[in-house]
Length: 408
Ligand SMILES: Nc1ncnc2c1ncn2[C@@H]1O[C@H](COP(=O)(O)OP(=O)(O)OP(=O)(O)O)[C@@H](O)[C@H]1O
Ligand SMILES: [Mg+2]
Image (tube, rainbow, N blue to C red):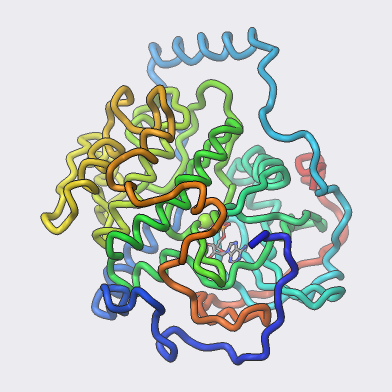
């Protein structure tokens, strides 16, 4: 399906997963696992908070960084790989164009709402960021980058943004509404995925990451909460809050503890390699139901990541273990995806033998699970519920931060 197509309206009633049950893969272990819930909630809390901790690099690191920066500045012919043209312009949308509905998710700087267009009656998702919070948490650059990236990205497995606008207090990003919920929720309900399911989702993620990397974008926040499932069962990566266009290296410590690569923790300059590490963590979590370096205390998680000792449970297929060993490795000269052949090394790995990559890109492969949602009617039954606070959307008056967000 071309994701620019209008959403089809359906007359069927919204259904809850428990009522309908899961589609074709239910006979494996795609089943609810209530007993997992409290541990999972704990883990969820841990994983949902991306972090940004300022660090002091060592003298040697500073020297290395300075050298690379110098090289970057010198190479002024290096320009953006992103397409220059986009249909997304400022001022195309305004708050009055939408009816704001329930909250679909919350983040550190605001929330994401289900909304309905006053004009065409279709449903969209709007991410709202509080300017004061963005400034306070030093996320101005990341937020402007998020808009810039999303405006230009065009890929079947990445969220489409239609436009942005702002009021005196908030920033708004209008996106397609992806009805099937987070991969995170499906994984927690299922406990873990059978091989073919994990393979399918990770293969679609791989194509999305490969596309981003080919445009010199590192994603930096891969985790099941940021992967949505569309009504047909294909994935859409959302949340470009940490994505960055990088020609050489970058240094910022960001991401989510369980998914952060060791080179990010040790303040080394890093590049696309970090996303391939996170892909390894994602595959591990899908196959086992937990992340390999999980600890209640994030600092312990970091220690475990630096040691990089992974215990592979015996039920994992040898091919999967081989792939994971070569993704979850601190050795950048060994990490698949980071070698001369790039993502091709991962695509050609024996665990993915049966994947026909062109067909997958064309969505010409049956999905393992079709979310039980009524399409096109704003069914949000697969999203968790969040308390709905007082909204200050449409605020007018003084805006002390206007200079920071001129593109919105
Ligand atoms: N286009 C969308 N359609 C449906 N749900 C969405 C969409 N975009 C985001 N969401 C929901 O909102 C949640 C928060 O969105 P997002 O991750 O972009 O925000 P965030 O503020 O960066 O969150 P965090 O700080 O926790 O990473 C997502 O995990 C998802 O559940
Ligand atoms: Mg997120």
